[in-house]
Length: 147
View 1 (cartoon, rainbow, N blue to C red):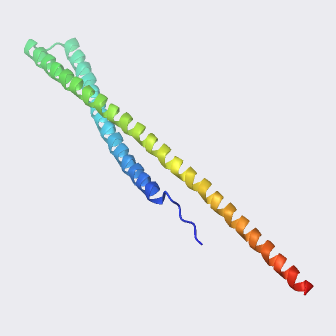
View 2 (spheres, one colour):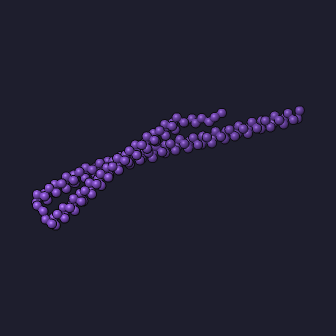
View 3 (cartoon, rainbow, N blue to C red):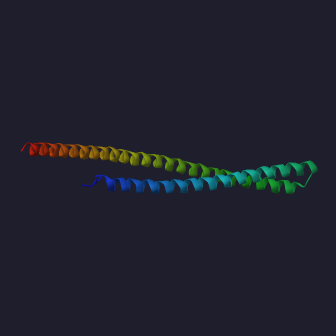
């Protein structure tokens, strides 16, 4: 008599859901990382541009060039602001996916724990049956010796 776990299909389903959630989390983390990296480079570019502009201001340059650089910095700040929103959204999605993954892990652990306890009960029943059979065999052998 082999062991058959009564919730095996559910456990398989939960494990598949967990794997799908893991891939969604990995994808969300990758998206967040790319967005954050892009924001970093935009901020670095802005900083370099401001430093360059300060050096030029010290050496002196034309007003139309100053206006040009100010317009460029202004456009860059708008791009940075937009990218910050993208990063915040990506972070929120990644955190949501992490929470979903945590919940799926908990569900799988619950079913694994149920299976573990069920296997223990099954093995205990087998041991009890074997002990009963051994007692019966011993009793039969004892009775046959007496004859």
